[in-house]
Image 1 (cartoon, rainbow, N blue to C red):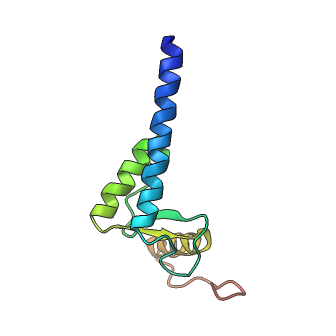
Image 2 (image 1 turned 180 degrees about the vertical axis):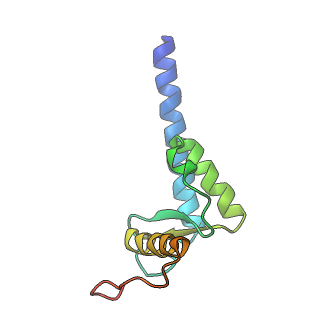
Amino acid sequence: MTQHAAEKESVSQKSLRARKARRDLIASLGGKCATCPRTENLHCDCIIPQGCAHHFMPWPQRVRFYWQEHLKGNLQLLCPRCHIRKTTLENHKARGVRSIPQSPDGI
């Protein structure tokens, strides 16, 4: 096996372990959005924001970061709609805006 092939296999195995770790994390967090009943396309969200550096980490490192936040009690699952809503509210609070208009469906 060439060095390139060994490195490629190593990356592939890391990716597989990271996928399993993410599935386990989602199961550990209950497998559904923290604010609505959705169970598909869930995002990991830090309850108390931890900046954005973890968004630029390689996937295996990011999953480790999320596990650490989960163990601290600072992680929840959100569907894309609830995640956007929470992030928008956080951004408005940071800018001193008191409220934001609701979408037509009330979310």
